[in-house]
Every structure is written in structure tokens, then in C-alpha cells.
Amino acid sequence: MISPGGAPRVLAGGDPAAVAEAARLLRAGRLVAFPTETVYGLGANALDAAAVARVFAAKERPAFDPLIVHLAEPADLAAHVLAEDAADPRVARLAARFWPGPLTMVLRRREHIPGIVTAGLPTVGLRVPDHPVARDLLRAAGIPVAAPSANRFGRVSPTRAAHVVRSLGDRVDLILDGGRCRVGVESTVVLLAEGRALLLRPGGLPAEAIEAAIGPLTHPADGEPGAAALAPGRSGAHYATAVHLEIVDPARPAAAARLRARPGERLGLLAMSAAGAAAARAAGGPFATVEILSEDGDPVAVAAGLFEALHDLETAGLDRIVALPVAPVGLGRAVMDRLRRAALAAPRDGAAGPGTPAGGQ
Ligand code: TXA
Ligand code: MG
Image 1: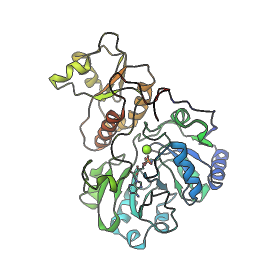
Image 2: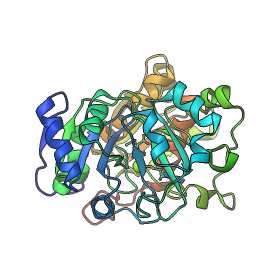
Image 3: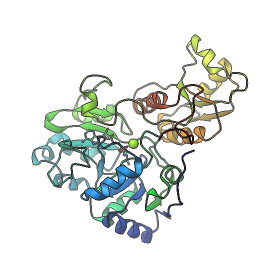
Image 4: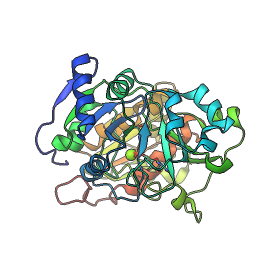
């Protein structure tokens, strides 16, 4: 596994003294990991370029990948974006309906947002998280907080404080523990600048809900020219597990071979429902470990448990993980997006994992 370095400070997010200490650290340019409803974030003062640089260093994140800026109140948006974008009625409608919540709006930024936050882009991603600890912290700090997911770049996002400890160790000055994240996949990112409406990342708010509020979204397909430039950090592989992972649909006859453990192979199964697990067991196995995200395949429970199951599976001493697919609609779109990227990023079958001592980050 990744060597965590020294032990970080972890304090209870529900303790007002801990929140006050975290706010003080943020104002002093230090790094604080905190829970949001989606995943844990690695926060820094968004107005302090040196503090933000520490986030990139701690995550080993490339400078071309912009950070999301977290605000305490929806009304704070107007201070950070061009007046024209703040006055866009679609922005007001989405903020009123979905903030606080798992929605990031990308709008043209004002000059005071340092270029390092936005990877030099003229736009900034903003969101108001829906977690009591996050909001207490943002209110106490009194500053906008730039926060990517609190994992090393390219790895599975954290949905528990323990995941942050394992991934970042003492690279973070303080971790506020708020228990398990409720939504479990990152925010949905939409670009609304200059009258556009582009879905840059499917996430915890279903695209269908956004479309019901403001009309159709354009979905720039991955690999399409320009899509990578519009959503830097989204291209290619991400969410790498330390163990080979592949998506296998048991309904396909050709899948049976992939669902079967080879002699001596420790095979793990990630199933979205009990019925899916039963189908996979009937078609293949035996499985050394089985994670069932929801008994009845409820998409909310599937999304909520996805990253935790990936963390558990990658530390279970397996040789290979097979994941069963979900329908890519609603929250299922975000789940399939993360699984596909994990499958792309994971080590090849039989190869050493990125989390093994010899591997990369
Ligand atoms: O739920 C979330 O969004 C979590 C929590 C901590 O809030 N944060 C998160 O941040 O997922 P991160 O850094 O892992 O993902 C941010 C992504 C970038 O990789 C990029 O794709 C998109 O958001 N993004 C941010 N600012 C952008 C901008 N100005 N233009 C285009 N895409 C942007
Ligand atoms: Mg991330």
C-alpha cells in the first residue's frame, strides 16, 4: 500500500473547538481535510496561492488540473465570478434548487482568484457543500476554500477519514472526521459560462435533475477534440485501484471466462445488487471477496458505497477485481464513469499495482 508517512492529526468534525482550530489553520495557509456530502476534500485558502500550491504538492497533482472552490453560502458566488455570469438566471435557479449540494458550477472568474486554483483557466468551479462540518468550517474560516478530493492524484477518492489517513498521511495538517460521506461520488460539474450548458463531469446530482431545471445539457464525449481542454483532469485514467479491475456484464456469454477464478487466483467481485452477485456466482467464481453495494440495486446506495468498496477490495489481498455494470442513467451515470476510469487506470491483469511499493502514485 501507499506509505502514509507520519500519523496525521484527526479530530472529530462535530467538536466546535476542532472546527475552530481547522479554520485557524486554513487562514494560516495550512491544509485541512474535511468531510463533504460527496467525498472528503483537501482544503486550502483559495485566495492564498502558496497554500493552494501545497495542495498540488500533497496530492502530487499536475498543475493543469483545476480545483473546485467551496463557499459557505450560495450568495457568496457573486463575489467571485463576472457580474454577467452571476446574473445568469440559470445560475440563480440551479443555486436555489441544488445548493447546498453536489453541484459545481463553472463560471468566468474574477481576477482575485489565483491562477493556480483554476490551472490558468478564465473560469472557476464553485460549490456550496451540503455537510454540516464543511459548512461550519467554511463559515468559521470566512474564506473561500479550494479543495480537490483528499486522495493522491489518480487514485480512488476518500469517503471516510481513514481513507484520507491512508492516502495522504501527515501531508495534511489536520483531518476533520465527519464519518462516512452520504453521497459517495463527487459533485456534478457543469460549465455555464457565456450561455453554454456543458456537463463536464457526471456526479452526485443526476444530470436529469439539472436538465429539468434549466433545459438540455451538452455532453462533451470523452476523446472528442476539445473535451479534455474544457474539463482538464478528466481525460483518461483515474480512480486507480492497486489491483487490476475490469467491468464484466454476466449477461454476456463471453463474460463467463472473466468471471471465473483461475487456479490459485484470488478474485474479488463488486456487485451492485444481490441479484447481480447471484448471477455472477452462477456464471463464474469462486470469489474470495464479494462486495454488494445494495441488496436491491438502489442507485443512491450504490453510489454511496462505491469508493468505500473499492478501498476495501484493493486492500483485501486480491489478484483481480471484477465489477458488474449499472445502467448509466441518473446516479448510475456517475457510477459507470468512475468504474470505467478505474478500469482504465488499474494495473493490467497480473501486473503490480500502482499502490505497491515499486509502483507509481
Ligand atoms: O464533490 C466534489 O466535487 C469534491 C469535493 C471535495 O467537493 N471535489 C472534487 O475535486 O472532486 P477534484 O479536484 O477531485 O475534481 C475537480 C474537477 C477537475 O478535475 C475538473 O475536471 C473540474 O472539477 N473543474 C474544476 N474547475 C474547473 C474549471 N474551471 N473548468 C473546468 N473544469 C473544472
Ligand atoms: Mg478527485
